[in-house]
Amino acid sequence: MSKSLKINKLINPFEKTIFVEGDKSLSIRWVLLSSLSKKKSVAYNLLKSDDVLSAISCIKKLGAKVKFIKNKCEIIGTGLNYKYKKNLILDAGNSGTLGRLILGLLINYKNKFKLVGDKSLEKRDFSRVTTPLEKFGASFSKKNNLPILMKGVNNPKSINYFEKKGSAQCKTAIMLAGLKSKGITKIKAKKSRDHTELLFKYLKLPLKVKKFKNYDLISIKGIKDIKPLNYKIPGDISSCSFFIVLTILSKNSKLLIRNININPTRIGIIHILKKMGASIKIINKKNYKGEKIGDIYVKSSSNLKAINCPTKYNSSAIDEFLIIFLVAAKSHGISIFKDLAELNQKESPRLYWGSKILNYMGIKNRVTKKSIKIYGNPNQVIKKNISIKNFLKDHRIFMMSTIAALTFKSKGSWNINDLDSIKTSFPTFLKTLKKLS
Image 1 (cartoon, rainbow, N blue to C red):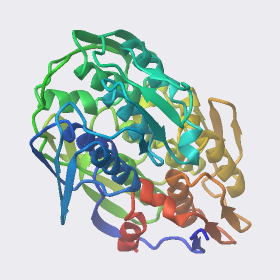
Image 2: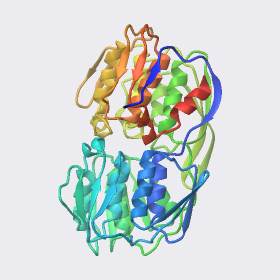
Image 3: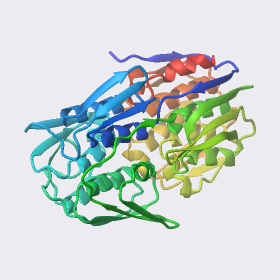
Image 4: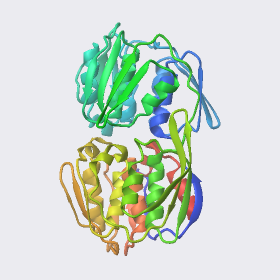
């Protein structure tokens, strides 16, 4: 039976300092890249969420050795040539990042293997990676959805590819396949997260990136070996975004969140919320192995204003729009968010779920296949009990609902199902929440 969370009162004012768990994107990339080195790689503050544990399970099946020692994880990989038996089945669980990236890693194996995932992952689009990987020489039982049977190729050929969606997962899958190919693989990629490029540069892999206004030109040469990757993983901006909004929408509260990854391709939420009048500062900035790290200081913010959100922030805030919608709901005026079809390619159709939760709360909104218009009401009082369920165990739906319950006045209570969904990305979410009040 699904565990649920019941909330029937607002959070008390707080003034605290917190840390959040390691960045999920970096944690998964560290696991996969470390599996390619024959020497020991060490990570501190690795996120121990279901998505990352699924990645570890997959590389162990491919021959890597993994060891946890308190807050440290050690991986000794196999080199570029994985060792696995025939009839291999890899389970990506709920992780689109893992599922799409590992296909690129296995481009150079001609034995068939099967990639599976949970019911949510089975609904997500995989053609964005199977299409370019076919150009390398791979073949697939089907292209669009899991489960997929893939057969690699002994000598992958380098390719030229235009990545038009702004998908960092697609771009990374091609880059990983390029590492195992002869020649130079070239990608013209719409702007998206650049964690993989930064890790490649730190590892001194043969990567070149030319940046233009709307896209990057990336080239990667094939390699014969890879160095170990020792890394102290910073906190996840997507995880801390829930606490940023909790503080903004709470009364008389202040919060300092330490050691967060503030990569420019990830902080769209900061730009958007500041445009809406939120009090947010990034302090103690520093560089760490190519990534930008900093502390985020946020205060309660009254007189929030609506926004016609510039679409240039869509890619850098794609995982945070649900929680941004709550700020729009408490703002003066009508907020408009456009070109968000990608939200419906996540763990659940998030654009529709965002609209549905706002409807439950009595917040007027209009939603289409790729946009939403939110009619803010700073004085909204919820007049009924709300039950959140059947949301495909999407962790961000659960956390959005929790923050809404703690910050919007209500004459009823909230009952939020599938509590265990937070294990996907932020297992200590509720534990961290309790530290505030």
